[in-house]
Image 1: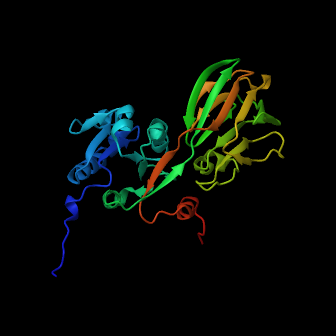
Image 2: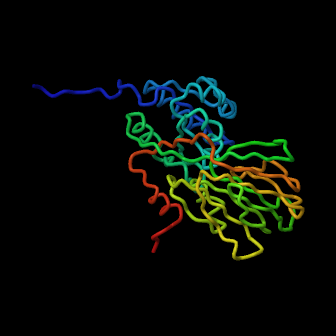
Image 3: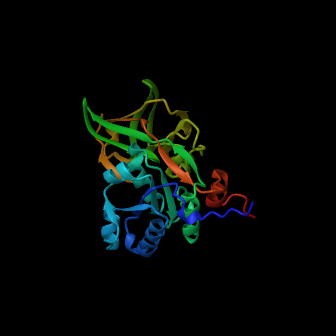
Length: 300
């Protein structure tokens, strides 16, 4: 029997419809984004470009879509930017089950697995079916003022209560599953997912949690009592943070973005979100290799 030859260029891509999302200042990445769109189209993919991204790069050559349409139609979303871009995309798309992969055009890039210099070849590998998928926990938070919900949101990295624009410590009560934990005076507290454990929580001496650990880290920020240490609790817990009178000027941040001013007696309720976000990892991905690279471990 003679040799059998396959034309891989005509094989159906592993992801039929791919959305492209650029970071806020997308004019800097317009050329690479359009280059990637052309590659995907050549491979037989339907390409969607997120609406604001398309407006920023001035492209009308491809179909544009808002996040709702991307959530309904896309099999994969490729984010060109940094961790902030990935966080934003995750908040928009997690409920739709659309997996994400990031091309790093930011700084550290804990969540953006694809190096910009290897974008084309790595995307080719993903389209050929060579990838793994990791699930990442998300949080949901609501702010109660009395019995009324005044704000609700979700986060991939963290929910943070901090002192806002004041120069003084704030004071708040922390309960977990209805049980009193402590009355804390500090600059704030970080409630972080395993993904967020390598972000603000890490800079505040919090623990690093492997992504599949079913836990949530509570990390005080500059506590008045130095014995108030970070703790990790089950991700089935419900965490309640109640602002006291000394908490005047407190503010809620979500994934590093300010979202709500908090008043005395406001309650911030944080729990695991009902949905997770899925990250697509290229061949050879290793969480520990990523930590070694980003945190400069094992350097001589």
